[in-house]
Length: 214
Image 1 (cartoon, rainbow, N blue to C red):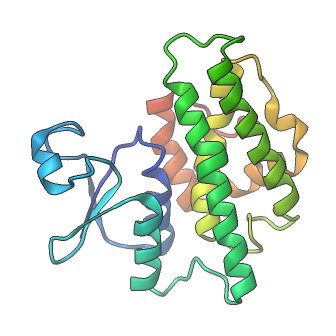
Image 2 (cartoon, rainbow, N blue to C red; image 1 turned 45 degrees about the vertical axis):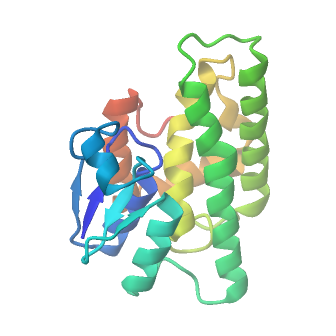
């Protein structure tokens, strides 16, 4: 198998975290010819990364689909809890991380010149705040988002929160995480996991980010 990914792609980071956490030997390469190239689009008609190429050559795009496939294909070490209720919580946290934090931050990062009174930006910032509030009430006091061990939820949430301080500061929201002490505590703990730290170290140069910024 082969994963097409780039260090600058926040949606690829959760897949790489999953690969590292499970100790999988999967080649990771940038999309051939570049993301917008005809060569890559001939491989993946969606033209997006991440994209996992299965052993039979089938392309599997979309972060969530890839993570679920890897978890189904390689059962150990498991990144899912055992009970249906705990698994539902993991899926909820994944959705919060992707839809309410990561996606808004990516949209905000695309603004060439951040404007504090930009209604477009205000709408995305409101979604980020909703995401942080949801995380604050959903995560507990355990080291990881859904309990005492790393799950797929952390693979999504940790990279998203890593991007947050710098991007929100550009819109006058410096120190936003300080209003959510439970989330801030979680960041400091989860970032110490080897698989998470490896992904954050890969992301940092591309986004000019610093580790352990809360």
